[in-house]
Image 1 (cartoon, chains in turn brown, purple, cyan, red):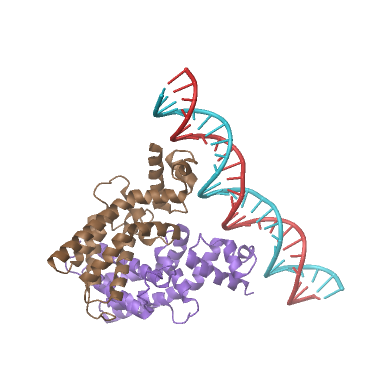
Image 2 (spheres, rainbow over the protein chains, first blue to last red):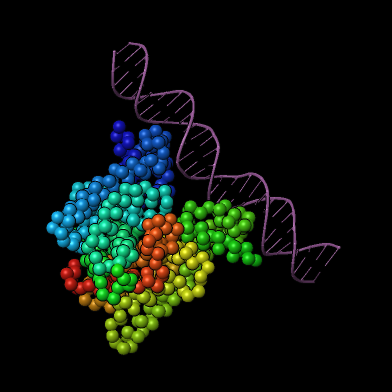
Length: 214
Length: 214
DNA sequence: AGTTGAGTTAAACGTTCGTTTAAATATACC
DNA sequence: GGTATATTTAAACGAACGTTTAACTCAACT
């Protein structure tokens, strides 16, 4: 019964570090210390294993994001005021850097989430997108409310810029292999979040000299 | 003798659309209408074929970027003035969206470049990074000169945010598969570049309330 | 005309992949 | 304690991968 957990943990680490296709069933089961056939026995297939890993690790993060975004929307509607841009950004960004606990193997966990934002592979992207969709839709809605002077096109693209920057930040921060690049820039998550929020607030909120009209 | 070209064109399309590992030698040669063994005969290996495609398509783009960045640095040093942030950004971003010609199959070409910014696979990343390194190094140097009030750490991370946003923008703009997402936001490249420059200028140039000190 | 060498071809190579099978072992229940 | 049920095991499966081989085509040159 902790066989399933051993497999889930090993798969999380390997998927995060090497990607889905590069992590073979044999590598996963060997790392978990269990027999090769047990993944198919307990999960059905390799893809179902990925789905299980994502559901286990990503769902809590997205639930927190969704709840915080909903709170912002509710408060904004009750008080009849524009939602605050930095507040929206913080609700969207912060949970991705850890839900509070999870000290153990946090880098792998974060790296897995980072893949959710940059993964070009269709098999993986399909699963990850399905889990993030509700939070993403509400996020876009809130951004439109917070930036009423911008066209829908402009909000859409600035939102895409944010996603790109966020994904890059996560992967740079947690991926082994970038160690040399960021050797002199070791940055704790709180600082990185602040920099991201500051960057995105300034970039998204800018209204002068913008392209497109409303 | 145009066998090599047929292979290069087919490989560019497949690598861009499906990624390196997902594009099999058989799919490439079949798409090119040549025999399976000819890739190994003309290029040596699949990885050498990727290297050839990257060299052929990415090198001109990076040469333009590097030259424009060097011009900015030279002028800045001669006149003894800070380089202009939007000008730097434009020099870094614009060539990536096309070097002028290349109407034919531009989406595939851009998509291939987009992979250079987001590709998690190590085999691919290694090759792409080698080609982009000179431009990237000079870019970081110029950013530090343009933002003298910011710490090295802050410039480094804002630069990473830019790369993330740029990579996301390229892939969203040229990748088939995102069609549904951006259905109502068809955007031409010039407009997208302007939005990117505007976004990044505001985000990177912001100095109030920043984290870290100099 | 005959020879050389680059280009091309079909077939096979060895490896790795995810999955399946059938037997063996452990666990739970009466 | 014996039987049913769940789990684990070693082995094999068929498919796909990148690469290699050896025979063949064909244009160029003496």
